[in-house]
Image (cartoon, rainbow, N blue to C red):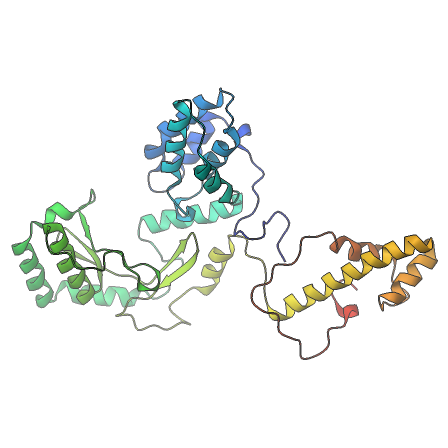
Length: 359
């Protein structure tokens, strides 16, 4: 069952803080605390939004929602929120309303995550930015061993020199001097799968991808091989554990499962399980029956002890059930329906309603 404040159909908790309570300087400070130089890329956008706030625009609520998402760690963004907000503000600046498709997109966005989630994910982002996974893994020596062997491998050096002889490799380096291979997405899907051999860049990336697969690399930095690590990363859709092909994996010793579980649960994931779901369903059905019985008791004009005894008997409850317990049962009938994850298996033993927690 979802926790108070959690929205069914989302993986986030409702965030009570509103942009209305913020100030320009505090927002810039929040942005500066995020990883990946977010203040440098979005400071002008924040100032632009504050200028917009002075006007009374029909799309204010949608723009505020986008603005709140600007302060969510980029790891949890389903799309480029910064680019979308920039495009939306440009449209408003030209005295136009947001089109229906942008409105649909913003409506589909859940509320930003809770402050607890933001803190946990932000800390994780800072670690990832610096390539540090030590809090989540426990077998750094395996990485160090292969990295040391690779640095001394003559075949590796010969192959890299051969690539440099055919391509001006510095053209493909980023601002950090890193030449990166192309990424492989979930389930090994690749947008760059069709081979293209016309442009020099296409040829280089095809050659470099094969080279990186041969030596278990994610890239090269100034002739230094960048070996893949055992990593744990959050994505907008879940938590991804990557085990390099060279890694002799020991699930008990190599990973800090307690820290990984805490990181994953930081999203506000509710408890799940067949027994838990069965008990929740039983409690929900009992609550519905109790609501019907309450209306029938009203029709019978039952009050006090007579009403309590009659309802307890109909619900197969102990006659000693007090009024507070009945109120708790009735309160469940007003809750949102339970969201199930997968089918609920029949319990081997009959679930006694009287054995549920709180009774």
